[in-house]
Image (cartoon, rainbow, N blue to C red; front, side):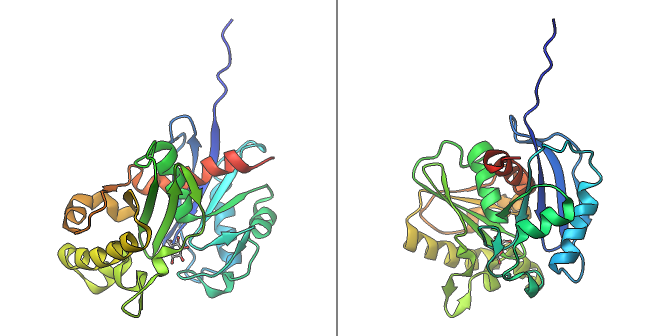
Length: 256
Ligand code: BGC
């Protein structure tokens, strides 16, 4: 008799500065099991408006009630609460996003920092898989997100994009968003990235840097120009990492 194959699935939502994206993830492969749906982030990106967009997104999928759902936030999240918010509406600060999203979506959710989700996805399926010692995964986007992984274990909420260098918040000089806004060439941007990664190198002595975020698709245009001693590789999951990591963490930590 043929046995039904039980699929190892979870849903991931990635809340970004310009788009809110979601898909069902196959956790055996780290690949999407459905199409990815993207809805633009509301212009006034308040908690309520973003929660309503997440609802609109998830309702496009006919998800079983017991499927774990993970949601990324571009902010540190501790015990379900957003601690501060650099790149969405300021009213997120202090909001319990577990309560907010569960009320709006009518189901349990697992909230996580976006870079931590991406870092976790790289550990399980990507460039940090099986790497011993300290890996720092950075996501270069509107801001700079970081995930620190020591011997495969994630240390959440590291926020190293906000390290101060020469009196500046690092992401205000070196994020991919700033590169676009200031019209910097990859060469000029790589100089700023060299300064940033050298600083992290000096403080943490990592064994590997993994560079993620949408721009990591163009890694051959800037990673070779970053002059540091630590090995540096592009992320393997490019822009799927947030969704995949959120889904994988939800599956690991949620009891539904
Ligand atoms: C936020 C981080 C986030 C990163 C990438 C930073 O401004 O403080 O929490 O991971 O942007 O979105």
